[in-house]
Image 1: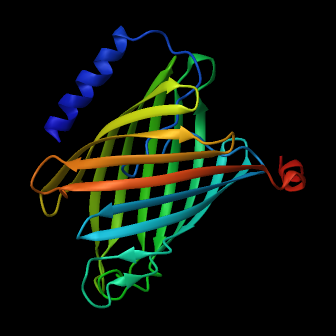
Image 2: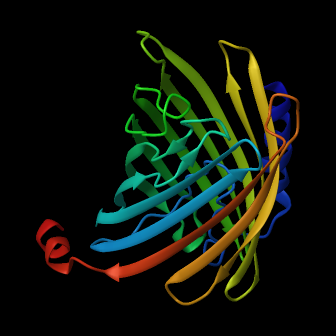
Length: 261
């Protein structure tokens, strides 16, 4: 934690030398569990897909539907259509379902930071056998704060995870933190990099990661992403390949939007 606090202090102190906040916020990374600072517009739907692969170890895919329920509010339902815990028998199948609520308390307009708070429940619905089925619900709370600086943006995320233990009346606590930067290389093309850590106090384990990737705006509605994440210490996985997409469906239920807001 001391090392991460030092890095965070250096990064945010350097913001004093950055130009004044301006421009549109550049999309946030998809490398780790970064939650991002944006929300779907009221009455709109967005579909997200993510696949991360640890070659020879595990693979996971996620599909999410994000719905804008009003100014600043977003609700999301996700599931893992494919989960693999390795090459052993009974280690493949459908992963868990997630239910997420997000509130954007600052929208990043007029040079101000963008910020969100998010709560997520991971429901134990996996059919991937003992390797993927834990049988307990996890709860994750996160907050992100980001600032745009013309063609690039910075974002910081803190995450608290309360992970249920199988057949035990207790939880495992994990702390996560991410520092990330996105850069608009040219219209429709962005690059991003991030440093992250996951700390489990009970086991005194800290995993450190670094990574980089990019996003390509295939059309006004569809963006494709790719990234690689590297473990920086012995407790972290060696490396992880990440692929994703986001598809904005636009206004889908305008009647509900008008009735509610």
